[in-house]
Amino acid sequence: MSKRKRPNILFLFTDDQRADTIAALGNRHIFTPNIDRLVKEGTACTSNYIFGGTSGAVCMPSRAMLHSGRTLFHIQDQGQEIPPEHVTLGQCLQAGGYRTFGTGKWHNGPASYARSFSAGERIFFGGMSDHFQVPLNPFDPSGRYPAEAMYHEDKKHSSDLFSESAVNFIRGHDKRQPFFAYVSYTAPHDPRDTHPRFHDMYDADRLPTPENFMPLHPFDNGDMKVRDEMLAGFPRSEQEIHRHLAEYYAMITHIDDRIGQIFKALEETGQWDNTIIVFAGDNGLALGRHGLMGKQNLYEHSVTVPLIFSGPGIPRGQRRTALTNLIDIYPTLCDLAGIEPPETVEGSSLVKVLHDDEASVRDGAMLAYRHLHRGVRHQRWKLIEYVVEGVRTTQLFDLESDPFELNNLAGQSACAAHLKRLRKRLVAWRDDMGDTCSEFWSHYNDA
Image (tube, rainbow, N blue to C red):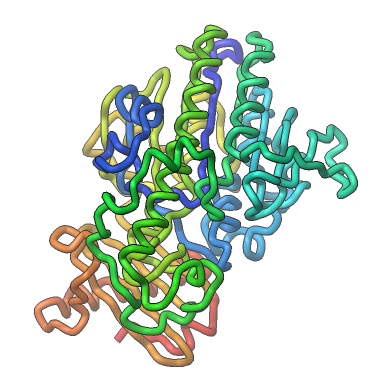
């Protein structure tokens, strides 16, 4: 494929956005018309997982995996940096003739950002900040990014800043070269603050209580007082959870509104029809489900995230239930652009999944959180194992009959064969993926 015929790529990446927060995919309580447009005009992967994380800041390893295409225990440390030997998505696309642009959150160190992007604006190196006072960096061609260059644009919300930067890039882009524009939001991560007009769209008292709401988690999962869990009182109250949901939805609607401005720039510059758009998130969030607030767990609400592809070559109005993972985005974009991914990439191209609802690239989802939790999903069954101070707790769920993970079947003799099978898969995954965490495995066996 010639460079001139290669499609542009716009990658929209959100922070802490659950998979069930898109109106067109079934959430009738949220307003997301622009993301809905992507669902209508593209293909949504509705069983998209992350691997979890080896850090309480799950977004850090998640983003390292996204940009390297590598599995959890094959990234460097917890993802603070992406080492030079792991070719990033931006590097790969640059080598294939793309102009690469990045704005917003980069949680994996300045060096890997500098390798990935040939242009940029309003770069945030870090995990979270006040949305109205984000510490920003101008693009530095030298790649040094000195601390003294950092600045703030007070009273401008992060979602406005990063979207405006994307619009500026698109409107100024030389169409003779394809672009890769990575727009990385810090919303809807807390603090859940946005413009009043978006907050006014949601009445907390009218939102339903989540089906798997619990006042408290049923047992100690080892990280019950991590920062995210302290954002609401104990026991959790339905009224407080409704307030958090209203604020969360308002932030997502704000992002959606700003995405509409980016779409407008593509259309007005004649680049819409030749631009592949990817929409995804880095991890989910509990917000009252199972008595939890954060993403430091392996329940579906925290390990499944949105993934939508739209644009030239993508089937319209399709949904795929095949199991996918964030690390698959890298090789998929390479495939769509006609570029060979580097050997360091461990994900799988989803192109065949996008075009065939019977196709798949993996038969299971493998999950981990720090030294505390390990899990695996295979077909309709899901296993989560906990080791907390030497005490082991097991959960087994049938996701087909129990999608909200409320009925633990681990103690039922009728499910013993499923439990044994999943435990064997978990141990095989440990060996295949290089999980050498002795703090967990020294207390675990597959019996």
